[in-house]
Amino acid sequence: MKKIYILRHAEAVSGYDDFNRILSSNGYRQALTIGKKLAEENHKIDKIIASAAIRTLTTSEIVAEQIGFDKAQIETFQELYNATIRIWLNLIHSIDENTKNVLLVGHNPHISYLVELLSGEALEGLGTAYLALLETDKKWQEIDKQTAKLLKVLKPA
Image (cartoon, rainbow, N blue to C red; front, side, top):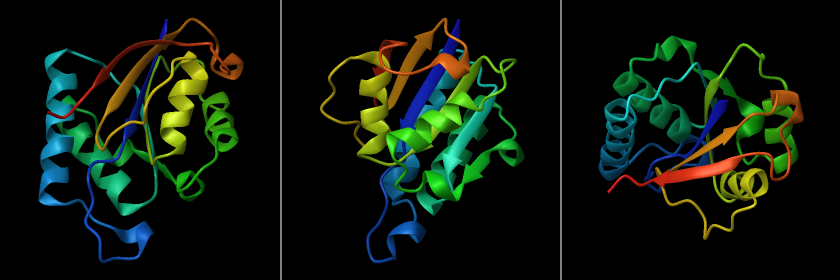
């Protein structure tokens, strides 16, 4: 079984251009809390893939630090900033089959839509630093509509 962790970036401040928005102090706490929850539950992540936006990268780095993942191994992609579902699916389809557990970090609304598409579960949208945990027995290239089961949603509070 493979696990797909889908995380919305933590809370960011306003006053910057959108791509370069940094985390608020609350956002740092949110990311730290989610990372600690993953560590406490002993989740093992093989790969972290994130939007190249500052708030998603920072969120990814904080979570990585908490779970003992090498921050230098985080993969960032410019095209994941405001990515459509098709872009996210293409990325998922490109994951090496030896990878079992992947953390995807992105932006709303599409990151929430991705959870809904993969699981078939209706969400009211992932809040900042909410993490959806899905599981699938499919190959990465086969993942599409309703091919994963939503196990739970972790919240930072």
